[in-house]
Image (cartoon, rainbow, N blue to C red; front, side, top):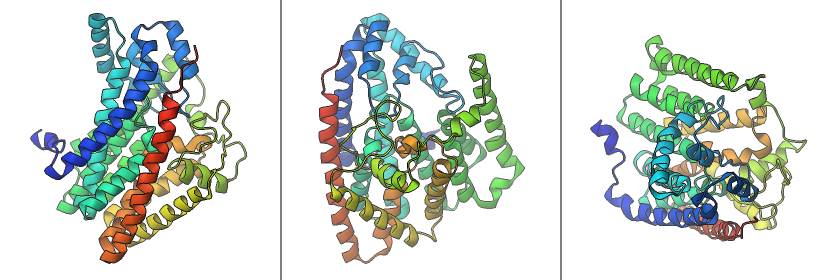
Length: 416
């Protein structure tokens, strides 16, 4: 228990960068909370309708606000079989606060949860870069800030959806994996099962990422029946039974697997989707149709206004591929490659969520700063500092560009 608690304790070199990151995230959360707080403070059905008419944050759903206000299985129970139950303690606490203050505090509670999870996601990513990839702290801070300045990472840790939770669990698993690889130890049955159940319980497809991480970390021992049956087979069976039982119990019939995997990319070319959405919108917002939803008015493909944005995308791709090649002999590098391969197959072969693939950025974009991290480990010092200069400029650009767009977007008056 003490070991589990210790990983959440801040180290001396983490405190100041983490505090600055905390202040930034609190600022953005204050914008989204203040924008809608008037609707939730004195909550009724009419206010919810007004909120839904004004909440347009790409393909993200504000279901969590609804679940904390009036608990129900609001999520897709096939994809998120345990998520509503994870929110239940916060719902109970919200009802208590509502009874005491007369105010629906769901926004505040979700805000605190997302801020805490985001800060620890920052810390785990930073530690992976410093402790496991082995780069200088200044390089690690820049790469970590770069990651959270990416478009659909920054947006995802602000909106009341499940993506920030998934990001925290995936980075926690990666951090634990890196420590075990470095110490030449393996995941135990209990720890692996807990990480798998929590991650898959939030988003079922991410459980496969945890399985890959455990497999590469543990090696052949993963295939022992005494390991994979209690860690993967039995939990997967129970999660699927739970999801199907809840779905059918709620009267939603049909083929749930087909519904989740169907391809709805609306005739856009794969090249356009890769350039503009998968590697584009995930990292840099398009100014046209800003945070628009493809199910409402946004086209699947939107072009950037500045050619420089394509240059930034090309530089990041080049640095990432280069870094991944240099880290190809490291097991952590194998994990990054497998995560990217799995993500590519999930979206581009099976077609899952391809029409708005960028909203899934939290599930995979962390491989980019981690891959670039290997450049700082293996290249000569002069080249390292040159790359640092590029990444510092790109990081500042992302935060200023997205900060400007989000500030104006979140301070736009409500339409009653």
